[in-house]
Image (cartoon, rainbow, N blue to C red; front, top):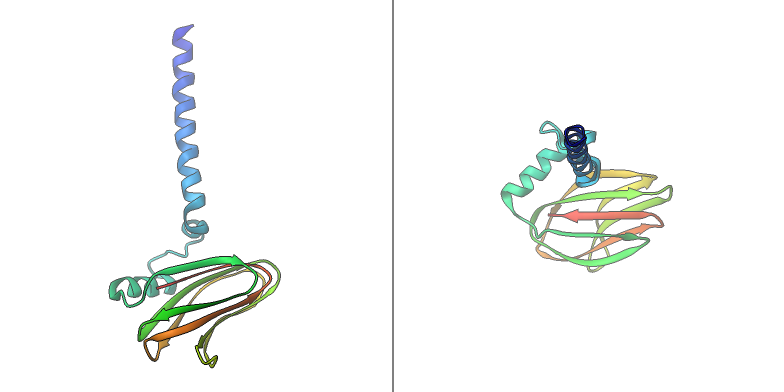
Length: 142
């Protein structure tokens, strides 16, 4: 009886380990590994790699539901924004100066979105990050 339970325990342990690995890959960075978005040949990977090497902007992230108007500080030079939107609603993500003049539309559309936008920041200063939507969204910039 003891010898027949040993293979069952080993098989059960292997199954639990395999489930752990599967859960890790499914939860890692919103399925990016499975969709190929981190393929070294992709534009997104190249932009993120450039930002990582130059370390030119602060790294911050926001996520939420609905509208947001957030003041952020950006250094002169390129700023990379990684943006996602979930839901069927329309969305608009824009970068504005503190005097409310438009610097760049970072993302605009309807429905689900997952993309990267790069902006050349003209002057080191405070800027307004403006999100208009009814859906769920997230923004990381570096």
